[in-house]
Length: 156
Image 1: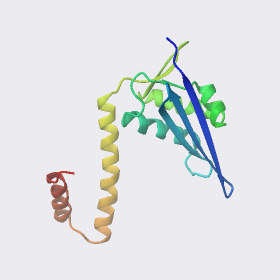
Image 2: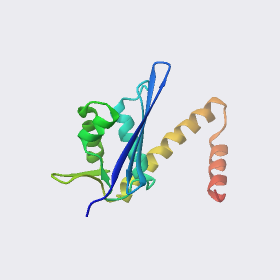
Image 3: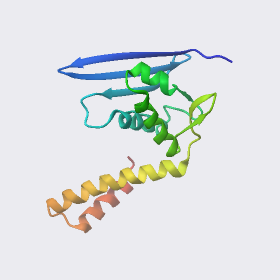
């Protein structure tokens, strides 16, 4: 069974800064988007990795969805093959994608433990910021706990 795969690349040039919007379409449906900025302090491989992780976790990229080959993606977004390889290697190491020799690279079956771990890490980061602000403005622990309780009781 063959499927129709098409890609688009939009390059914006703003004051010595390039922003690339790369989109992959399968059977006319947008399945993957990458936004890469050469002026970001975040390395390009990390921008690729972060973007793919977000799309895997939110379901934009579904289980077993094929991903562009390392070579094709590097060529399409005009970066080194080693840059894409580093992103894919880290994604595979972290359990987000799987590579099957001779077949390609695919989104891994969702690992709920991995997703929960990532969510907890994000929550810890936000809590750290909240605690720093609370200390800065002398808001006590009891008030913070009360605020958290209020948020848990609300239907968000």
